[in-house]
Image (cartoon, rainbow, N blue to C red; front, side):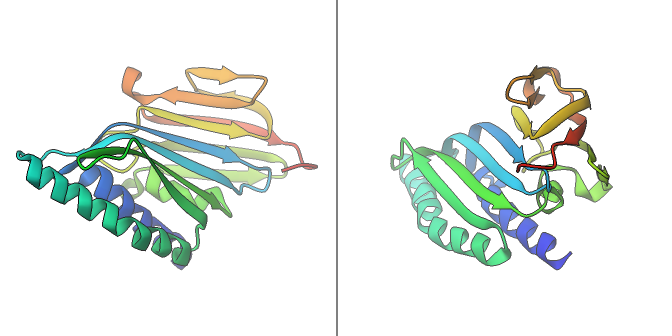
Amino acid sequence: MKSIVKITSWLFIFAGVLLSSACIQSETDEIHVTLNNDLSGKLTIIFRKISSDEKTIAAQKKEMADFYTDLPKTIQELKESGLKDPQVELADKTDTACGAVLKADFDNIATILPILADNDKSDFEIARTGDTFSLRMQVNGFSDDPPKIFSIKVNGEVLEQNAQNYDVESHTLQWKMGETGNRRIYLRIKTHPANN
């Protein structure tokens, strides 16, 4: 449990810099999870157009310079917290804005659920019985606003789900949070035991 809390706190620090700060904002955010049979997987969070909402150009440049300066330290702290190989890739970097992609591996989906769901309300539940896995949660993401897109790619047969889109070939479920306002996610899968 200590590891989950530690990982969660560092991801909140990173995300807080991006989305919760009074001065740093992001126009679009997406969360993608690839889930293996053993419930380990990959997490990808996409932030588009990260910028400062400071009033002057000088203040915006300072705010973004601080953001850029703190990234290596944040990545190291994510590694030390237990996430596997966390990486932040910046795109379209200028003095006043950029895009970013945070990628990391995790040992168990329970590790990342507290940062995605409303953990103050214990609003997530995972269960595994034999080769059947179920997940129920309300996605909040890192701020008061949920991510625009949340997707989970699974390795198995989807038995039940409430996604707006489901690609049967790739086993990818996608919820468009921004379009519907629905933050509820439910899925039940039968995993394929041979491959991850």
